[in-house]
Length: 399
Ligand code: ATP
Ligand code: MG
Image (cartoon, rainbow, N blue to C red; front, side, top):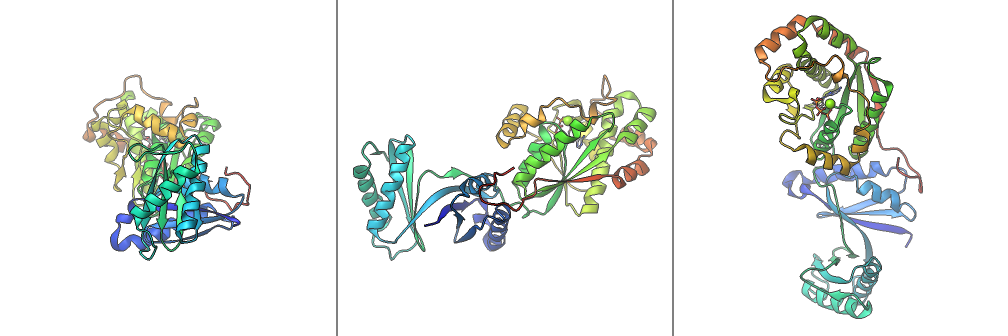
């Protein structure tokens, strides 16, 4: 056989009743665009997909499966003829592979949707368990706490696979429409974007900088973060918006303690306008309640007052340590901690307002006459395409 086959278990979308077909089609489209150019084939029915890829493309296929949102798990799979002898032999081979990986105890799990197969699932477990126990010396059955599992599925074909890899779960990217992520160079907002992509949002992103007060390195760092998140979410259009004139206006016209809250209000208003231009249905931010002065519930009320779209804040109730762990897992942490300044620290107050009154914030904000500056900042925005799937060739590593 000159292809390698992976079995894919869809995640939560198995719950989607009448809409399931649409979700499944989207998941397949997402996977095939991540592997464009490699000559892969995706087939499948009834809660299982099979990805067949040419020999030599396994590295790219596995890297895509590890980034594919909407699947519960995946496994490299053997396909064998639908008879007991072939099945038992495939289980033995799988047992040998597990043994070579250091596994010493195993059990068989069997599912049979094709009821014409001569053994039922109990019969398969017994026959395969005995054959593996005899055929692979040193590998012992342990049904309570096995180190390895050999899975057998009798469907339109017979499939045998070892320990399945965990998928990212969630819903296929795009199934919830598109949202605009407020992406800073920090730790939190990339994680927030990732979490909302896992609920099916496709993402645009906006980054406000204060060039030339903030450096080009700070901008590059945010582009890199967008590329990492985009590699899970099938690409991100990142809009880089220069807020220097607005920040100068804030410094000129408002009391120092209010500067951060007013800047946040302007960011939200600008993001809301940009989202409407793009047809994005919501904003996504990395705010976490009371994490810093600008994120007290009162100050969130102030920033919220400039937005009409829903603002999704998936980190609102999370602990910083848990956010950091997630950032490490998805691969953004190392980039986020690079020491380049964000525009928020520019002209930032020594003693910021902790519990801003929205009415007072509103008055101070009006005095800024921010509208034309926001429109100009939007008009001169730069667009950077980050992490979109590219056409690949066999052997070419994923960027
Ligand atoms: P992060 O780690 O995401 O920067 P943070 O803990 O530094 O978050 P804040 O600086 O208060 O918190 O920012 C709160 C949220 O506001 C961010 O998570 C992000 O969504 C948005 N935000 C902050 N600064 C910017 C920026 N320069 N460009 C775009 N969005 C921003
Ligand atoms: Mg920040």
